[in-house]
Image (cartoon, helix red, strand yellow):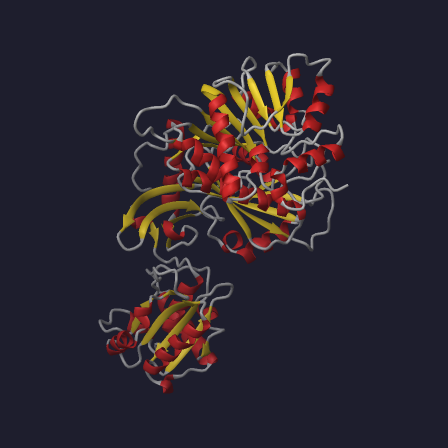
Length: 627
């Protein structure tokens, strides 16, 4: 039996609704949810003794259920004679104080200020099917009548999908009238209610428009959003901001519905924000592993990334997260990164905070009441201590922070907040500095300092930095390139430029080359580099270029100045280290190059000099090729 219209315009037709209720019979049609799904919002904004008008009541059980829990001063109107007769018959014997009237809501017969609440469940959406002049005129009459029959301080409570044109019309109309505008998202009760009716992938909202006494002149406009049923409303500056906030929640709901329906949507990420401040608090990535064999315990898990480790390949790159999900053995894994600037009490509090939200991302087919495990590295949330933050005129906001690595060593990092998942620079702290930092943190916890307390000085002076440490594979490769100097002793005390190194990022995200900036590979600039190199010197450049055409152009420009060009690609990264020399006859075969790297390492390992034993220079050059 076809009970839904062929086009949305039929929603505004009285004939359609007559036919609809004739076909439907006495079976209630719950537009946008039942009483159980809406009662939290309804009880918040309607008091039991208030006089309520329900417009476009249809044959919903909502009015009857409100009456049965104590809201007994209710008047219902609808344009359909069929449904009014049905509803009178249904309630006449045991709801004597509730009335049902056939009435056009655009020409209501009630005196001014007759009601304290006008309740609308889907009626505005049904009427406002398009933005044609005739439709808008009808909606203007409807909203004007709502305003007329409401008392000052009364509320128009409209349950809606908040489609863009509906939200724009309702908010625009009532804000111009000087009313307070609040949009409240209705809690999703899909797990508690049998889905016997067609469901919407969009979330349901309640518009609460509160009538204020007219103020001469221009009254301040008030826009608020309540994103959680029991949450505090957040004040917004404009109708545009309110519309954008609603749109974000609709997009999130649509994403959740897609994730429930199917797996393998590709890279899915989202931010969860603090409900009071709007600041991002968690970044979530949803990773599906279709090859994992389904079982009761392999459906779904949450992985909390320790603070400061979100930049690591395993957690910060899509391929790394796929590897993590596959090794964890779950069909769907949600990784959770914790934001700097936010306070976290520990794993238990994070789990309590996230439990409800992450369940909205659960895959289809997961058993009801399934316990979802929260995983992490070592079972804790890691350590992050901000040592300094400021703003650079060139690069914007930045932060210097100490984080604890996988081996319990501490690292000091420079992060530009414009690209907060990229470590711009990193130094390893010596163990004594780590111990002092640890003692300082314990002392801070005892004092229970608030986030607004003045920052403590840095954990360690400059002497506590491990100068032998190189944080990146491409840095190690760059150092290995010094083996191209036939005499490694040249590095020790010689005043000439035997080596020039560039590892400079571009600040222009629109380019296909993020390192270096184009000016650093300009022909005139390269000629300047050539002019300061010795004849046997080497120019070492970190190239990060995703645009293949641009990369070919850069390589050709380099070859024009430096005839001998070696390249060492960094596995798992876009980085390529280029070693540039002036004379092609200096070309070395791989065995000779590795032998020179070993000689260089012996020179650098001499007593009194710091050296990191975690890598071997010659290993860095095994995959070097000549361009």
